[in-house]
Image 1: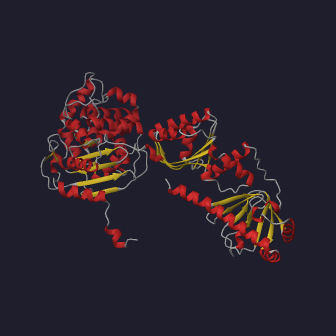
Image 2 (image 1 turned 60 degrees about the vertical axis):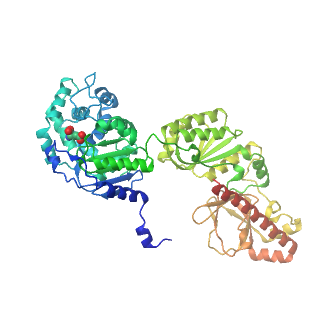
Image 3 (image 1 turned 45 degrees about the vertical axis):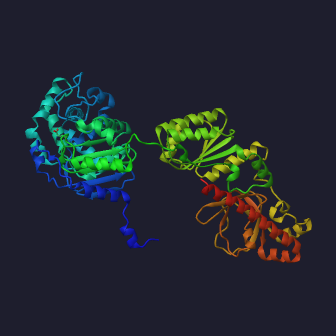
Amino acid sequence: MPSATGWASSKPPLLRFLDRCHAQFATEDDGAVADYIPELGKADPAHFGISLATLDGHVYEVGDTKIPFTIQSISKPFVFALALDTLGAAKVESAIGVEPSGDPFNSIRLNAENHPFNPMVNAGAIACSGLIHEAKGDGAFEYIRQALGRFAGRELGVDEAVYASESATGDRNRAIGYLLRTNAVLKDRVDLVLSVYFRQCAVLVTARDIAVMAATLANRGVNPVTGEQVMTPYAISRTLSVMTSSGMYDYAGEWIYRVGIPAKSGVGGGILAALPARLGLGSYSPKLDKHGNSVRGIKVCEALSSHYDLHMLNRSDDARNSIIADYDMGRNPSRRSRRAHEQQILAAHRDEVRVIELVGTLSFSNVDYVSRQLASKPRPQFVIFDLRRVTSLTRAGARLVTEEFRELAAHRVTVVLSGVKRGSREWQIITEWTAGISNVRDFYLLDTAIEWAEDQIVYRYGGAIDFHDTTELSEQPLLAGLTPEELTDLASVGMVRHYKAGEKIISAGEAATSLYFLRSGAVHITLPDGVRLATLTAGMAFGEMALLESHRSADVTADMAATAFEIPLRDFDRFRKQHPRAGEAVMRNLAQLLADRLIVANTKVDLLTSY
Ligand code: GLU
């Protein structure tokens, strides 16, 4: 265990890396602070903050990550996403194109259809603000501010001075507005729409906010810090698409070629970079290069991408790692103790029940791999998929799962699912995939699923399990080898006990004073924490550990109405003295039963450690 100071001094390597970037690029002094909006010219060129948010909601911060600055063009992707979700994709996509323009961001030019080239240039962004204004009227800006706040995970304010400054000087944007209006892309008054646009550009954010906003884009619209689904995955993926092709002004092509991370920058000095399924980065440093991108921010993104090889098109995935264990029921029987004839049936048909334990995300490649693994061996009658370690399911994965279940149903294979709680979100998704497929069963515990499948196999091969059967002491494996006289003597000291369903027969911690031989019904043995150790049916002994230990280590509860012979330990000791040969046989049988349990336990441990 490291000492307290040992913990305190250890820094995650990613934070060390960001520290190094900060130290190295802080000396970079090229570029100029934007001043075409006069108020922006007041920014302190020394400010430099880097923040990185992970998709599990951790936020790293280095330098001036709490200094507010205006979001400017970084608002564009978010307002585009908001327009898609508010007005519907068809309306937005018919008004604004998605092609890179090759022109500067503030170009007063539309495409061949007289529509903006894309939502990342001013014409497209003003059109988006216009669409929101059409839908929300005077409430448009507030609606946008609230949405930006959900991406950042906090309420965002406005820099009124920057807003006023841009309103006073933004004639170029007004020109774009009139061009849009004359082409019917804007329906509302230009001054009203531009006031929304200028205000949205003047929203105040920090490098930390930008990192969280980026991480929300990288996380299919779920803010990893607040957990809120801010926008639909559709809107997010389309937003990332236009960021990829047009996010970095007229440097976009070079950027995606070299850095390979969808990004958006703003003339306020911020850069946002969102690497899908990985991270969100926010940086702030006001000096811009000739394309309008923050000089230090670009360096940070380049360093991050190259140091960790994060280019989004330079990826591979190992589909094989989703199967954590794959075995037949013989390698991991349920905790139900079986009678000899049941054991024989199960041993002869062990490969009729296949168990596949899955882990992580079930994606297109993972599910395809699982389906080929299944097909590579003779088809079993039951396949149990244990999903307790599955964390997510992609849409492609879900589609393939449904198709695989249909395929199995066509071959009369029963699918058994375990590890999913009824009523949970995962459970609902599964119910959706399996709607209309009749061969699917589900159990919460893998052990219960295996037990159920075992029962089916026992039934199918003629070994009816009759809980109402009454067995005699002569059928008890623990008493194997005793003569009829010895058994009669033993029976004479026993008492027949009757238990109701749910009745507790033995409690952990009590003194162990008798042995029990189950005559009918079933009981289960559980540890005090609720873990089931075994289910026993007629013909099996419990509490037999009293022969070795003085206190009970587990609870025994009747599963249904049950009867048992109870033999007090002191009577059993007397019996052993009278019949030393029989006493020795019982102890040998006990050793044999324990050895068998040990073999089963070892196989289970082996299964857990061999994958
Ligand atoms: N409000 C600024 C403009 O429209 C945003 C520019 C930018 O950040 O690219 O000129």
